[in-house]
Image 1 (cartoon, rainbow over the protein chains, first blue to last red):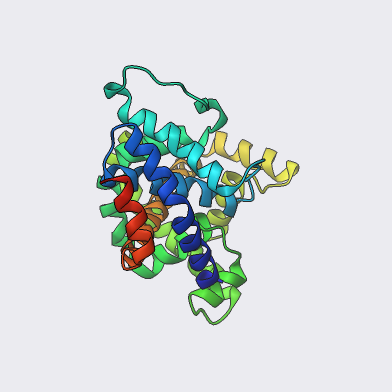
Image 2: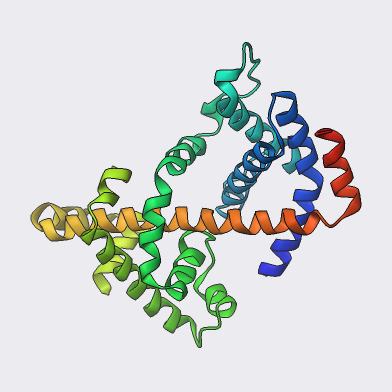
Length: 174
Length: 81
């Protein structure tokens, strides 16, 4: 299942990146900026899609370009004399969370790694990719759905305990 | 572990109305439960950020893979020439 999704993402990347790259170039950005903006826009699209919250009236390509346009305006707003914003941020409430994450994530993620790679992959599969218990068992080679479920809560307790010991989490996320 | 499961159900809005009312009352009288719920909420957020970080690495790998494709590279070079 994961491999099939990877192929779909690659196809979407191939078809959509040039469109976003042109947009970024027109706003004065370079290739590195185009990649940053495009990756963020694609991540937002994937998250909505996995959560079954994607309600778009246009093609995925146009939707991603619309998000990229907003991200781009944010990125270059100080350098622009005039922008004609075709989309309002209110149409994409998930962007607010995204900006917050960009500013806060790095120092916290390095501490999260104390939970161990296997735990993090398991928690990521549940809370980020939104896989079912059965899908997680198959994808991560667990013996049964029951053992996945038990392990999930043990890992979550481990992360929660780490958070309790680190005041920085409260500061960054509050 | 049952408590962690219950907190998760609360945070993910998966509780039945009766259980929800009971859980909310428990949080009022049990500061430790309230604190654990707060930490678990933060855990969810951090895990989401970790997931995004991993997804960015995957997208970077896709870009590197596509960079070996002449047609793709040529299209990008034309834009940034």
